[in-house]
Image 1 (cartoon, helix red, strand yellow):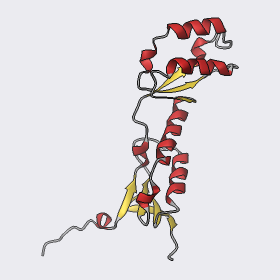
Image 2 (image 1 turned 45 degrees about the horizontal axis):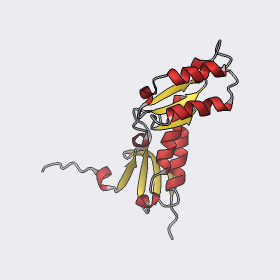
Image 3 (image 1 turned 90 degrees about the horizontal axis):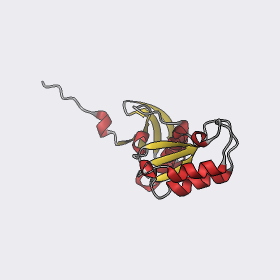
Image 4 (image 1 turned 30 degrees about the vertical axis):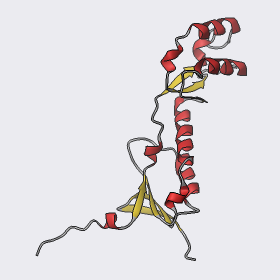
Length: 170
């Protein structure tokens, strides 16, 4: 008698949702206002304007720009606005924060675009490990999206899951 291996996970009807797939595809680069400060403390308007005017903005072409100041300096709000006027024609997107913060914001933005109806009545496993660090906020957001429509939500891998939510029978 031949032993037939049956993949019960494949037959279970579980849908695996990998949050890594929602990471932004474009490169994220920093625009740090620290580089334009006198002694990394003071923004001199004339010098700042001149530096921005002479910068090759094409280096930001189709990139996501994280704009911030990495030093503990008081930056006037108009300084960010002025930088954005130069960045906007080139950058794919511009957000305030360090690159890791911007990455998290964009991941959440992409998760929020998920059409929950596609998961209506389904059994879903939200993948728990991978190559990229998925922030806690992403797991919170996907649970908020899926809970109203899913039959069940689990965390982990299809072969080893932690139950999160199960809809009550109607």
